[in-house]
Image (cartoon, one colour):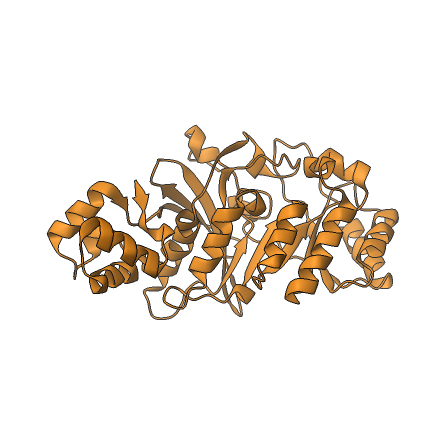
Length: 348
């Protein structure tokens, strides 16, 4: 079925006028309903006959919230989104002083194989369409009842590797920032990648001013390969060079995500190598405490060693802070989103 949220306003107008013979102003009305995550039965200024015709062929709301879990620790909300084909995706809403940040998924599952991440367990099921990614944002934004924009910032850090679903993610970026739509500035959007080098460079050439985040987690190639198979295709140095190119093209500072794993990437030699790689770059390092995923068997670094690692980076002249962990009790923290619901389990 055709997912209407895949379309820009002009594309939707062209499609509906050609396929259903409706007037352009009616198509614009439908587009406005779609930006509010309203299904066909709620489009009150559209004729019932047209709504019935559309519902037989098309999907209005690409991602519907079917379950919400709220963290007792910090109020973070995790959403289960049902997609039109019965697959599901997870997203997380985190509230900060500056607004609400929504973490969205770009794939059902993931094929990257990062050892510390729950999303990759079971592999990749399929890519999400641009409208299915956008649909997560629109569904959560609708919770604000239209008074103000409820979702102010977006991070593409949920299930999946965004640059492994390149075309749909780029279309999503254009849709979410469209002035006639939800109109979120791309400067308020962060895209996280494990380091698919050709697509980092391709994205840079498009001059889309998103915040690029590289999930690095180990500066030594031989060690990184053990936890992140992507390093077998693209070395750490190649990923860093691609990030430098992204900064040169967009002027946007690079963020490095670095999850500390006990005894694997938390020594002074790791900090020294990381500082060497990043020297001269406009970059900030987010140091993350490993969030538990029972299947991985990995153990997080102790609090003492984590603080010591931050001190190493500081003395080496690297801008770095500890990233706050949110939603851990509902498995909504970094690395914990997964496709468990596809397996028929509602538990956490």
